[in-house]
Amino acid sequence: MKTLLCGSVAILVLSVAIVSESSQSRGAWTFEVDPAVRSGRPAVIAKATADTSQPIYACVRSLREDDRNTTIESASFTPSEEVRIEVPSHLESPTPVEIAVSMSPSMTSPTFSWRTVAPRRGQQLIQYRGKKTFPPPDDFDTYWEEAKHELDKVPITPAIERVPDKDTSTGLLHKVTLPALGAAKIVCWYYVPRKAYDNDGRIVAHFPAVIIMPGYGAEEPPVDRTSSGVITLSVNPRNHGPSRDYWKAPVEHLLWNIVEPEKFYYRYAFMDCLQAARFLFTRAEVDPKRVAAEGGSQGGLFALALGALEPRIACVVSNVTAFSAFGDGMLLAERGHHTQYGKLLQDYPTSASRIRRSLAYIDGANLARRIRCPVQINMGGVDPVCNYVTGIVVYNSVPRGVPKEYNVLPMCAHAVPPEMRAWNQAWYRRWLKLP
Image (cartoon, rainbow, N blue to C red):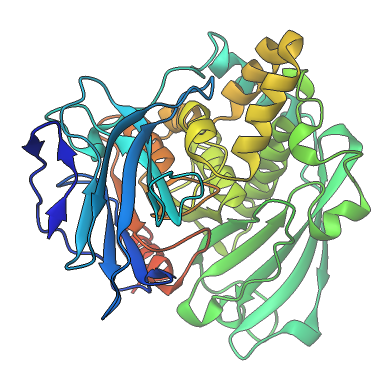
């Protein structure tokens, strides 16, 4: 095995197991990544196909906000053996980098590229606390307490309809429509175990519950986990799924009122999720000490927000967490919301300070500072939208002493595969005390 050289000193290679997911093939070579969260150095692993003579060329570039990226190291490799291209180990400060691999020495069109952070010398990546370019505003806590006080004025008067055609052998489905801030309404789907009621409809048992929230622009459909003895409340914040019948954003909702922090979309959307949680805590069939918040991508942000804003939440599961650690995300993401916001800041410099302020209020890493319940963060190692390093920043923002867990699937992109679901279930067994 070969390593990229740091000057005249070879980087030491530590043996780190990689989850056996499919590699990405590029002609005569295949590529995998090693996120190296707790040991070793983040690296791209290139493997030559049999009987090829095609060499590869690699470089490690620093990533800068002004796009003046510079090459830190470069090298070429013959296909005689597996190649491990690691980030530098000699840097004095953590550095966002891109490892690029090409079949051409010009490196103009990389065959494969991957973004990560090179930890500072002597540290592991799991210790990375992120760039400080979107710190919480001085009135961060006041901002959210005022939003909660506004929500206090909205009554929890649900319209609950049975949906018997979607009942299952273990669960009963209800459609729940709730009033929300700004004279809006939101729609949720509520699955309850049949065992919660006797033949006369009286409540005879109490069950743990999970509040599930959607990815960006997606509908959160009914999710039935009643066979496991779990109540689920699938929430559609405004502009999502059936809630669009009551409130539809006139622009892409991540931009709605972004220059007015008190009217920004996510302030309202967080309160929608909180209203749904407050409804759930009124239900007699729910065990109020065993309620979790869960979501993927944007839903992962919503889960963090509930953990930060609703102290009765027992634990949080945030998968492929989005809208978090903006300072790092805008450098490391290849597409999606981080790149959109980065371009917005460049295109509208006169509004940049207000945009940054709005984003700082809803940044998942800033919200994590308020969480006091157990938090699980799960990321994909090759996610082009939510880089796995931003999840590390969220993980390190959770206060000391609060139980937390960070996992990464090396070759997983922007998805929640079965391995993550298994991690979720283990977390629930631990903190919701599921059998």
